[in-house]
Length: 86
Image (cartoon, helix red, strand yellow):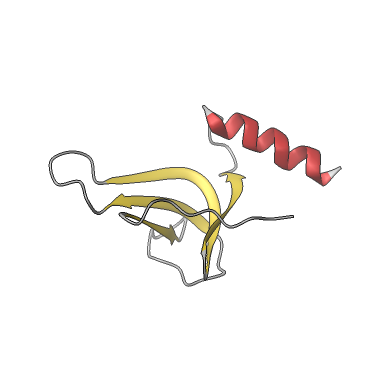
């Protein structure tokens, strides 16, 4: 079962086209970017190497972009996604 994820109210998540980095509409798969709307004096955006899509209630994480290095939590997510495919 796929569950929507959602960050705190001050984080905006967008899904971007992997070639152009243009925002994609709900339901289309692309790379996830997270924007910290409350942060004014440091990093305000993180472009991940994670694939996902937006939903009405948040976003769905599908795994890493093919060829990207698995790091941190993505290692566990990739293992979980692979085990669900068998």
